[in-house]
Image (cartoon, rainbow, N blue to C red):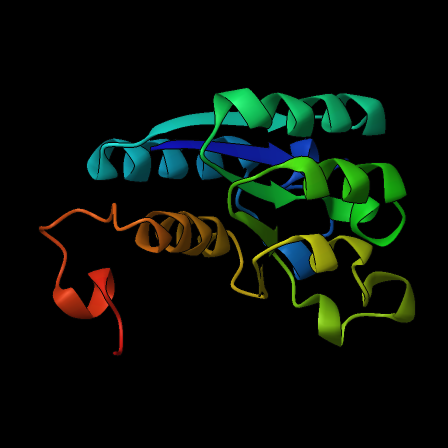
Length: 158
C-alpha cells in the first residue's frame, strides 16, 4: 500500500506556530511517527509540505500514479482552494483530510473546509495523532492493517 501525505502552508512551522492551538510537536516529528507506522504496517510513505498552492495541486495530481491513498492537511487552503478541491476529485483512491485542531470549534475563518466534500473522511482535533488515525483508516479501508493488531483495531465493530 502506498500512502502519500501532503501538508499545506505554515505547517513547516509546527512546534513554534501558535502552540496554544497546534501544540509543540514539529512536522519532522510527525513525519518520523508516520514513517515508523508505515514501516510497521508494511506500507510505503511519501511525505510532503509546501506553502504554495500550485505545488500542492501538482502533488495531488502526482498521487494518481504514486499513491493508493492520500492524506492531506491542507491547512489554510482548506478554506479557500477550489484548485485543490478540483484536483482531489480526480484522485481515485481514498482521501482523508487531517486537521490538528478542531476546526469546528475555531473562529469563523477556520471553521468550514471547502475540501471536505472531496474526501472520504475528516479527522480533526486529535492533534498530531490524527495523522496516525488517518493512516489506520486508509489501511483498514483496504484490509491492509497488520495481522498483529487486535481484531477490534483491524476490523472494528461489525
